[in-house]
Image (tube, rainbow, N blue to C red; front, side):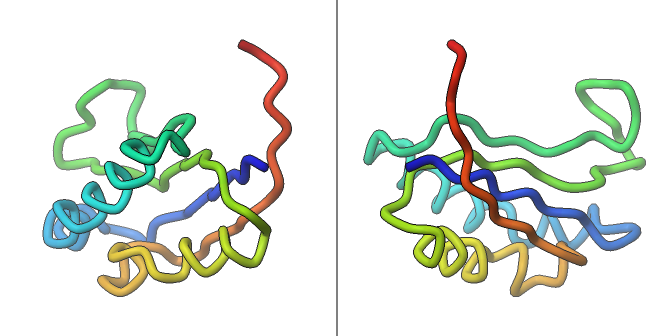
Length: 99
């Protein structure tokens, strides 16, 4: 089943994000290589593809896991969590309808 992992950044998280980004992307690429990643990306703090110094306000990952517990464990192990990027992370089942 798919799960949505919705994360909210702490204020001024950009430098923390930069420091943990390579490890964060490696985990996402592993999901992609396994055919389990539906989508992933950050929420820009401004209405722009590149928010510059404004940074980001959070992230969304939608991926396939065997259970809610497995999805939660994966989210808890995110390098952004360890680096203090996220203030909170919520994991919910996701029912894909379109496309």
